Length: 582
Image 1: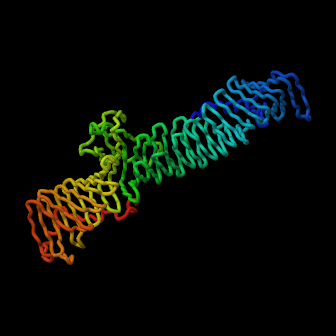
Image 2 (image 1 turned 60 degrees about the vertical axis):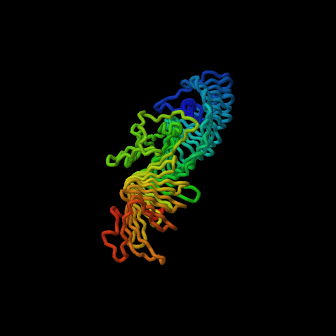
Image 3 (image 1 turned 180 degrees about the horizontal axis):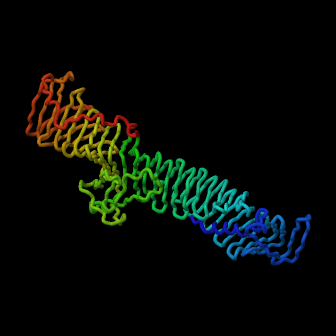
């Protein structure tokens, strides 16, 4: 917005020139600290008219010129009451303030009829303008329009306070400039600080299609920084934001949401909730903390993820070079909302290519390339670098979650210490004691990759110490363990698992034709294939170096019922999506 120096000059002018032309303009008497002297420079006819013993009116007619300080006043005729210090003027009024500001009107007592005020840069048009020198307040009540270098502000009423330099626009306020339209019932603007204060329901419509709805807040027109309160909303073609308190930096694109914060990414079909969300609309990145929840939605299926901290950013993948060519996301770490009680848990460090914990007790999480298992090469530049790429290049969005990660979907649930997800291969990577549940089956391991398709599980890959536990009935658990584990899903349900190890081990409870358990088979082999039918474990097949024992159901040794590392962790399992909001 360019609503700056012109308005300042306009109201600066009012303070000086309106001292001779306002609502019953009050010129301080000799008893005041300052004496304003009005000099009659020219007039074709001067008369003195006695009203009573103490009141005498001076009337000047024809080519009148009056001067006060550096302000020169022209009109066809004028009347001066020295007792009440009231000046009334008529016909072709022109006020010249030090050859810089000019005002024109047909009648002057309140500055009435076709008032036009200009400082060669900005112009105020109104039919009535009133200024009270005693209070320092200027007012128009029948509509006014201010134009200034492409910016036009109209309102039915306006009040200017000279002591605070505030302008109070009221009723049908509409501001138009090259970047945006602002609609409000009331708007407060300070000509000294260039800050607009919203004090009524306000809508800001950007020429880029963005819309902000707020009830209160401030907008620095010089810097583009804004803070909104009382549950404000922002939306554009890709995201929408809502929060009890919202800060925005238009130049950098950085935003900060506090209090019941919500962000909806309609492009990636992601909803983010949290006590605080930091983000950058230009870099398309965000970081959510304080009971944060992320929801992946598609059609009628949703996956809920919660963690202490959630983060997302973009990379550019060069399909020709088969590698990430640049890290384009960066998160502005300077807070727009000052909060001395709490601070961000993590900030993004482009030098180390990692999220660095501000809490020294927390460990930073390294960002890894979703297409490979090796860490991405570190960015040695101090700022984000955007490079030219060919038409085959693809923008990849990735998501990070760390500390107390929990996932809930109708068909699958999981927990871990940290998580990485990329749109490149739709893979969830779980680190730090991960556990995955599907119906009656539980999968654990050092690291788990969950490959998805249309947000549903397609394949499960476990690195090291993989174990599948399937609850047969109370107290009886089918168990398979090995070095690595591959599981496959059909329609969201586990269908087949292959366990490899040195050796792979298994505990399986076979059933007869009447579904009665006949014993426990404890076996080992190089490979174990596990088959499920209708969510139930149906068959176990061993490959190479098979060794096993079948124990009758009533003769199972107590120390043989569990494989090494067995833990049934149902108490950690999210039972419904509402748990993730607690």
